[in-house]
Structure formats: structure tokens, C-alpha cells
Amino acid sequence: MNSEEVSVERAPEELVPPMALAVTIKVIDSFGDWVGKTLAWLVIPLMGGLVYEVFARYVFNRPQVWVFEMTFMIYGGMFMLGASYTLLKKMHIRTDILYERFPVRWQGFVDGSLYLVIFFPGLIFLLDASWDQAFHSFNLRERSEASPWMPPIWPMKMAIPVGTGLLLIQGFSELLKSLYAVWRGKWL
Image (cartoon, rainbow, N blue to C red; front, side):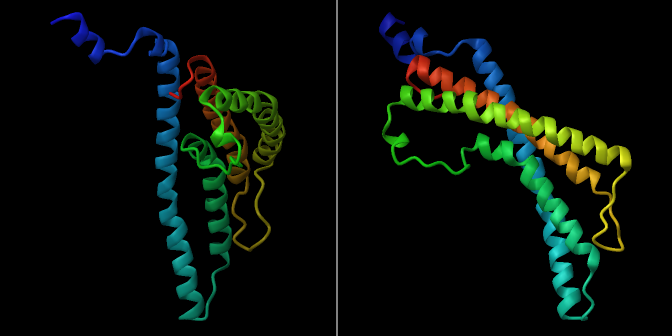
């Protein structure tokens, strides 16, 4: 085997990301992917409840009060806890009229700057505020008063700081990818 064959099979050393960086991103992204795919299963009870409610309301003329609360709690939990999966898959809304025309290094610079200036400070503030509210709700064993069913409301409130924490973790991975894009001129 000559040296030309080896160089074709292996990437140049300067293009290979450092092992610690690659492993950190892989672990965070794998966890975020697992969380998102696990949460996707909540669609089944959500749809089941909605189908049951429509059937009970329009076939038997007996609407169920508990279905509304159950569905908005499941949907709210999916929304908050699934935000990190949405970030991982780059499905959040982005105004990329100019951004898509930037070179990769500038895209990484813009992303990294916005993560540091807006994303992390905003989410840290949300985490602090929502944790206090969720913990207070948990200590009170707060219940919803919107229906006679009175389900506990603290699990839904707890989804806000947990989802924010998951979003912060995924945001760290995205920041690392942005820094790599600035450093090497390509996305990981």
C-alpha cells in the first residue's frame, strides 16, 4: 500500500475534529435524539383522548371534562420537553434570507454569537423563574381547578424547567458546532 492510497482513505488531520469535541457533541446529540423519539410516543394518548372526546361528544352527546385538561397537559409537556429535539433537528424558525448566503465560518459566527448573547441568557432566566414556580407548585401539591377532575398541575409546571434544561444542554452542543464551523469552515 503506498502513501497515495492512505491519503485517499483518511481525512487530513486538520479536518478531523478533536476527539473530546466529537464525543461531547455525539453524546449530547444522541441523548437529545433519544428524548425526542421517546416523547413522540405521547402522541398516542393525546390522539386517543381526542378521539374518545369527539366520539363521546358527537355520538353519545356526553362530552368529557377531563379530556381537555389531559390533552393540554400532554401537549404542553410535549412542546416544552421536545424543544431540544427540535433544536437538534434544526426545525426552529429561522429568518435566513441573508444567513444562507453567508460562508460557513460566518454562519458559525452568527449562530455562536446569538447563542451566547440571546439564547443562553434568556434560557437561564427562564430556568430560574420556572424552577421557582414549579418547585412552589410541587410543594403545594397544586391542582387544576378548571374541572371537577382536579388533576395535579405541578407535573406540567415541572416540564418547563426540565424542558429548558434539556434545551440548554442541546444549545451547548449547537454552540460547539458553531465554534467548530468558525474554526474549520465546515459544519460537524
